[in-house]
Amino acid sequence: MDIDDVQRRGTNTAGESRDSAVGPSYWSEAVQEARRVGLDVPDGQTDRVDALRSRIRSGDLVPDPDRIAKALLGQGVVDA
Image 1 (tube, one colour):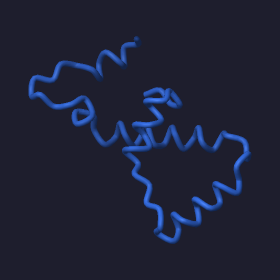
Image 2: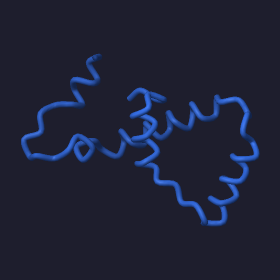
Image 3: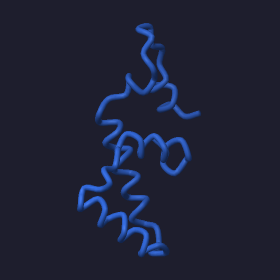
Image 4: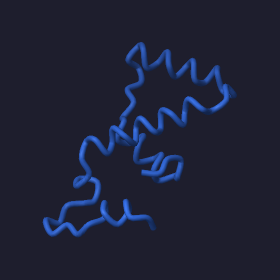
């Protein structure tokens, strides 16, 4: 465990979850890191990516940045 992990886990006497104690800048940084990691991935699934982009542009698919960031952190894809 590094120092950053200890600082983010601090005690929370208000009974809030760890997620609610994390500010918007934390999630913004996590999403940006996920974007950087995603851009480094080779073009292996271009058909699927193109289909998803098309659905996002048309409004049929609305990504949830908080959910994406939590999933990437939970799977160890990015390290906060």
